[in-house]
Structures are given as structure tokens and as C-alpha cells.
Image (cartoon, rainbow, N blue to C red):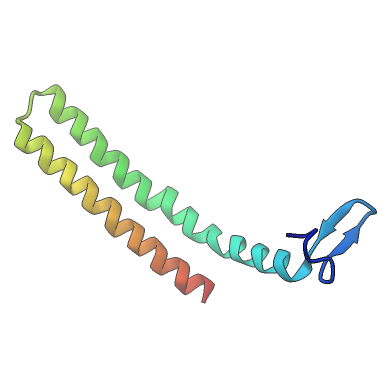
Length: 95
């Protein structure tokens, strides 16, 4: 990309090719995703971990397949709702 559009690119320090219009946009996009990633690790992952731990404990206690499938469904619902929530948060932060 940097080599195919030499009109917008700059050569920095004699060897580093950069394109300020692209690099600036990428920097701000990645910077805005940091709060969403933090929420993911602190909030979503801890609940996910607790749910998986519950699944393993039920499995060790020889729970029925129906009980285990119910936990798996709740984990799947949690993951999907969390993903939608994280994308909504990213839209708010980036917008």
C-alpha cells in the first residue's frame, strides 16, 4: 500500500515508508478500541470463565446431558450478547 501510492507516502529516517492519511486513521481506530478490549477482559471474560467453571463442576458431579446442554446454551447466549454489546460500545467510543 505504501509503495503503490507514492504520491501520499513519506520516507522517514531514510528507510521507513509511511502514509500519514492511512497511518493516522489506523492509529485512532486502534486507540479507540482499547477501552472496549479492557471491558472484554474485565467484564465479559470473567463471567465467561465463571460459566465454564460451572460447566466443569456440573460435569464432575455427573450432571445430566440436558443440564450440561442448558449451560452450553447459556454460555453461547452470553458470548453473543457480549459481542453485540462490545460492538455497540466500540461504535459509541469510535463515533
